[in-house]
Image: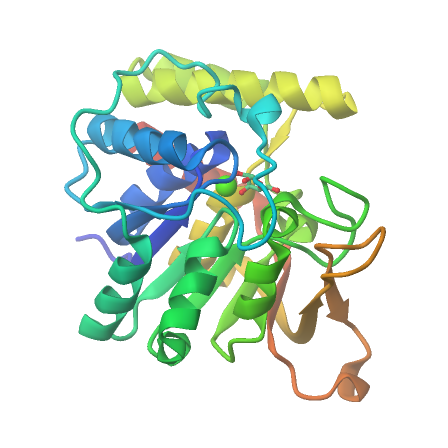
Length: 309
Ligand code: RIB
Ligand code: CA
């Protein structure tokens, strides 16, 4: 008897190496209702193709709906230098077969949350699709159990000193989401940088001797190499999987109510998620911000998901 309850979620993603590990994690620990894809780490066409490739690898029977091909304002600045030109570190994986279930992620998000209230919305890429859905139907903000997003953070960014990638790519979208009045839960870099996996985890995945274990080994080897080049670290942060586990295992996360605003105009700070830490002086909090995480348990759950995929 599996005592673990599996929260029902829609995953909005830009696979993306850590998105791929997040999808494996969600497939094991959540009731994954559907996936929407967005341009971010690589193009909108490629992130959708990658989600379909992962659906095949994992044998998932879920719909995939393609979304926005770029931010609400300006041009897409992708992260192919981190995730590889194909977005999955050049992994040897069969190409996507067929087409996505639709090219209208916004319609899927609006209609699915109308048909079933209480779903968790888990965006782990730029927030373009979520913002467009909220603009199409503001009531969406009050029909979902949470909007648990990987993005931003209470501190330094990773694209600039101020901005984290998912927010940096589409600050206008992030501003709409944070001002939506919905149950926003920000799982930002200040938390996700704590959840790290390294060479020992890659070795353990390789020793699993399974297609998903081999796939995860390739992704981890790539991420570790990138992080070593960047920061001399031999471990890599599990950004997107941390957002999944926040929903599936909330007891592992320590969050606080905070007011967060998104900077749109700052010369050096555009895309910053400014967290008001002033306490009562900050007024009514607008969201929750993740600060603490049980790292060992989180990593164990990610490894279990890979092993049992
Ligand atoms: O800053 C980390 C985020 O940017 C993750 O979602 C990663 O996939 C990239 O999209
Ligand atoms: Ca992502």
